[in-house]
Image (cartoon, rainbow, N blue to C red; front, side, top):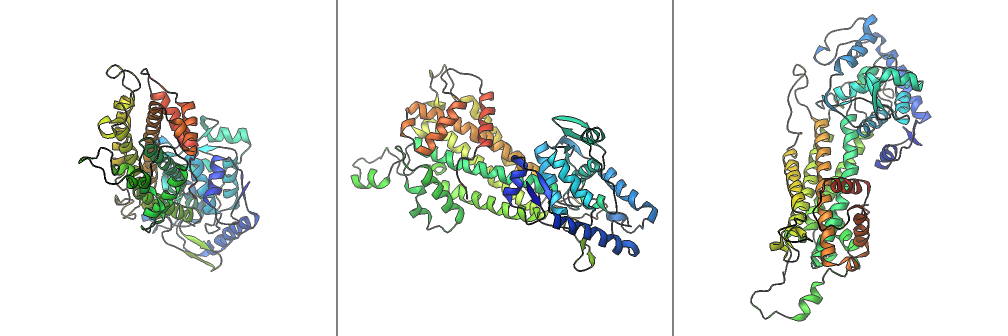
Length: 514
């Protein structure tokens, strides 16, 4: 059980609820503060003009709403903004969104009734997934459209996905004995105004990006190993003179992974002790290609970028991100723009660029292994069959290249793509949810590229008959991956093998990235 509101959420708390199906429950003390904020708002707003309580929304805030219409105002907001389009968000992302919205409301600065957070907990615990569409929010007054569909479910309307089936919310509520939320004062606006869609999706992206980083380091190590590269390029002695945390962390990971390898060569023993070669042209490469030699310098910035994204996204997860802010301590209500998604949008753009770089590195390492003129070690396309008759990994390389190309195009930043809307009230917007969803696509693509690289590495190991000479860490990966993708000589369709390998990479964390 994860208690919400007692202290700041960590990425582990978030991950445990999402991936380990931990139950959630509101902290009693925090729930009391939520109730206190609600009662303060009721009293404070009774004789004052408060945005979103007794006024219209956005550019219509100058229109006062009659007392008898205040509750209808909130329902109208929810229903009118439930206008998303495109594909439904997968239940995993919807659950992430709900966790983020719950944690924000539990900060007790939103003025919602306690029924709101209690119902959110119930839906999360019972795996009821509101139908929320990918397109809609521009990330300025928060993820308005995505969160409107959440609110629509909370009031018992719209549709949900339950046990893999799309059903009416009212039908599922009746079956599970769930009572829909009744608006008390500003529940509509408090649910809609917030960054919880982009934050929830963004946190899932961070978790998956960490796995990709681990696999990138592992596959880079294995690629160096099977081509019998020198060890000094990832050595602590070389990397510690560069003062970046990520570079030195990747150096340490590579050293640990390749410990005990019977294939990696030591430059001092191999070259220095034998003196200067007599031949004019040295056939043995003195230095490897950059995609093999510059791993710490290429993946190091990715490590740092993921770490920064985690810090920013966890801060946003624990933030109050709606408007206005109901401040019981200061007995006041403050209007502003905490729902603006710039922090998340910028981090998602940086993250997708970093992940695209991972896919580019993987594709170059893959190309090195497949091109016999470059590696001078393996047959073309690591073909274990008859050259000319069989094709080895030739066909699947096209998939890797086209996927990386899509990543490169998707990496154009959303953060600088603001389009004014809402009668120019929202004249600069973050596009944060778009940024998070595009980053998710880049991450999914990169799992595919790395999977193709791993499949190729396995074939290369078998061509060399070198599994016994691998380091213990890389041999373990080889053995587990070979159970999923057996050695092949004759050509067979690879799309199902690729699907299984992607699942393997998504479920495993090959290195400790702490």
